[in-house]
Length: 333
Image (cartoon, rainbow, N blue to C red; front, side, top):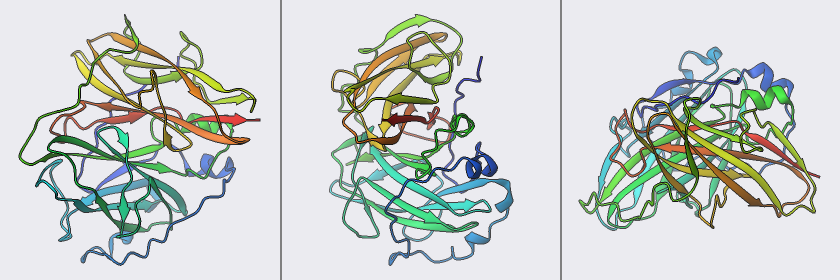
């Protein structure tokens, strides 16, 4: 049986994150998809970071992530108090600490819904795709619109090599757990920690007692834990059916929010919902069936799930886990 998911914890302080996909596998199995790349020569900059592209470990195959305030200081906490009508302006630092150039795609979720955002004062968009040189580090100035009073969960998703749509099995296997990176923090707006959204835990999905899965797993068969690497479907087919399994063997009750991306856009999971919430006791697995509408042209599209631990909580370094699974290649013929 394949190795299943693990809880992943992400720290806001600039840290080295090892990539699980070796550059050799990535390079040998590349099938490039043309993408429009954004300019990373930003007008808004912070001082004192010009030497960060000289950080060590360039050969180690790692990526550094950091969150900075407008003064150029690393944010050392994961929760922020925000005034009403105040926009969120910070810098996301990404270090491409490998020995090759790479393309990344940045996506924002606010309260588990994909949300438009602004980079460097430009027009708002649903993503930001850019290329980094080997060993380069950049600080990306972002702005998030004002939020309603209450507690909010903010997650930046950083997709590695979104331009590689290879159906090579070795490449797809190497995407397990680590094809996405995450920068997550929470905010309380207007000195209010209230969660105004009705989470409806366990409204969707069938729960059974099993101790075989910790985290998330997606398959194209209901009771199958074989890795779903690729799928060939006809353009005339209107739906793609798949199953998402969420498991907990942590020894304690845990809560989750489930999201899904297809072609880097959030999709409906069930009953026209973009996100579902789950509460599982130890040794429980929830399984959801999704019928995904397919209206795309011929080509290869990536599909990948996201499992957010501890939704709608004030975050610290111990409870901000986010994880993913294999990036499945959907080939529409």
